[in-house]
Length: 178
Image (tube, rainbow, N blue to C red):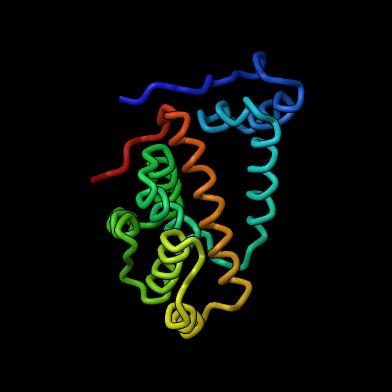
């Protein structure tokens, strides 16, 4: 039901600065629609990749990061990111049940649950988490660095959610299982 509000740029339509990034993506495979949208601003495209590349060096597990991405997409009603991160999660071996639970900010794993509780609060309260919430994430065994990485994952996912929600990016991932 969505229609693109912002043009999807192919390599030949993009600015020289965006072409550089899109060419690099094309060499690795398909250029997904979010990057075709971001290509309208090389600053936005390069900012995303700079943050994403740096966050790959995090100590927080990718399993937790992907579940946070699913949860944040659901909170923000981002159909594109929900489909993308549900797909990525399934490819990473996360069960369909756990992916579905993540949309509700839930997990059967207590440590992951603590991360989702904290991430949800960070998103819903613009980072103004209570002392009790902070103590809970510390008690679950997360380091100060991992707590900051949870916040960074929330911020990066909020960034992509708003880009897709503004532009009505056409979903080019399989629809998540109900």
